[in-house]
Length: 361
Ligand SMILES: [Zn+2]
Image 1: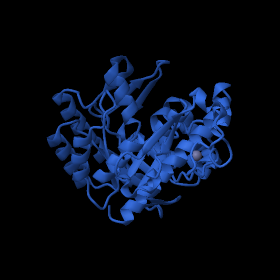
Image 2 (image 1 turned 90 degrees about the horizontal axis):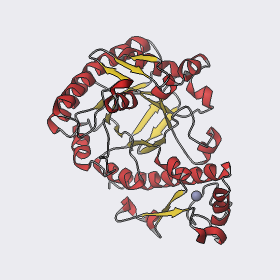
Image 3 (image 1 turned 180 degrees about the vertical axis):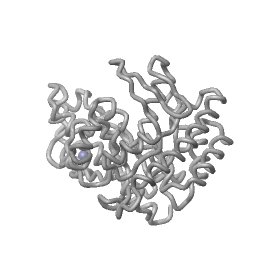
Image 4 (image 1 turned 135 degrees about the horizontal axis):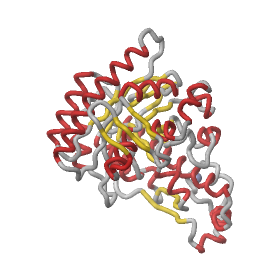
């Protein structure tokens, strides 16, 4: 089984990392996360930078101390958010060959360069840093996809150089991952991957949106791109995803995942369950997934736990009726317990995939 070794311990793959966007997984603290068996987190460089938190966290001794989280942290580059906002609405700024100029809602100007992006992630104390990339949507025009690949490769070279300069002589270095862009164009994905592999990185991510505007997984290009990544390096399906998509990407060879879905769905009263016997199905063939919506009045007097095969803090102590009533009265505890359950579910899913990996599925 592949492992990623970091200064904050080894991360076994496959792994699912919840998004602690602004240094918090919504509704949960680090003790809750440990109880859900979470093994690593993703923080969002752009949101930290945009909210003035980045420099404060750096001065306060880094992200691990700030969050009281002593396990691996991956920081994204911020590229995805910045580029998406600018491409949706040019009032947010401009993407230039050597930098990105972003203006936030308060008209504050943020200039992001590849060097600054690496400096910032290292100052946060991240264990896995991501290169700045130029993110597109799959339906963007060919010239935009070409420009995105050209920027992504040039910026990755500058990121690597800055990373080497700043970590030279360190006994323990973080890892640096690059992101493969190219939209739905296989030729561009090939070009981007081969140029990034020439520079050399510790891992590679699938860049751009993994789903279309209707939310359907872009399976063909995801699988093609996974095939371009070196087998010895972790393959990261960024922003993936729902339980079904996570399993689909695992089959393609991806081993690292992150997404807001489990906690966002929990806030919207949607809880994940395995279909009866689903948690024992090796490799999760067939449809393994069930969902429980906590606004269903039939749950008002349901004394059963949300799931009888879950060991989370919700299922081991409380009934469906209890959670239903917490949601009904907008109690903050509802979100905490529901999020706990969904993250625990994801880690049960990861356990099953690790089992499948061991058996060579
Ligand atoms: Zn549970």
